[in-house]
Length: 166
Image 1: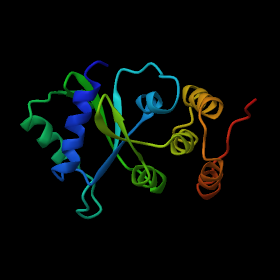
Image 2: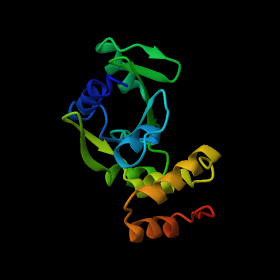
Image 3: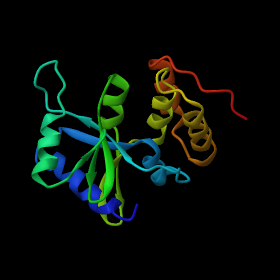
Image 4: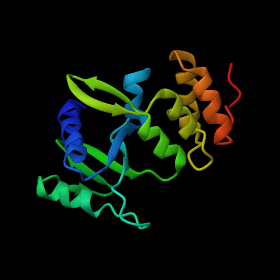
C-alpha cells in the first residue's frame, strides 16, 4: 500500500477537523506496526464519533470524503487510492482500544494504532474470533514484547480467553 502514508494524513484530518472525536488503525494493517505484516487489501479505522445522542451515523464521514473527492466502493472510502473501512467503536473494548492507542509514525506521518494487547483482545471477542484472527493472535503472542499485565487485565475485564497456544 504505497499510498498508506497519504491516506494516514487524510485520516488525521478527520480528527483535526472534528469529523471524528478520535481514531485508531486496527485490523491487519495495525500489524505492520507490531509484528509481521499480514496480507490485506484495506485499512480498518476504528472511530469514536462526536456524541450526538444514541444513534450512530457515518454520514459526516461520507460527507467529508465526498467533499475531498474520495469515492465510495462498497463499505469502503477510497482515500488516496487506499480502501479504508470506517468502523464505529461498537463496545467498551473498542472505545478503550481507541482511547489507549499508541501514537506512532509511518513514513513520517502520525498514526494512532491500536496496541497489540487490544488487537489480541478484540480478536478474541466471540463475534470476531475467526481462525485467521486466532493465527494473528498467535503471531502477536510470539513476536511482540507485550505488556502481559495489561493483556491479562483486558482478558479478565472483558471475559475473554486466549486460545491454546504453544
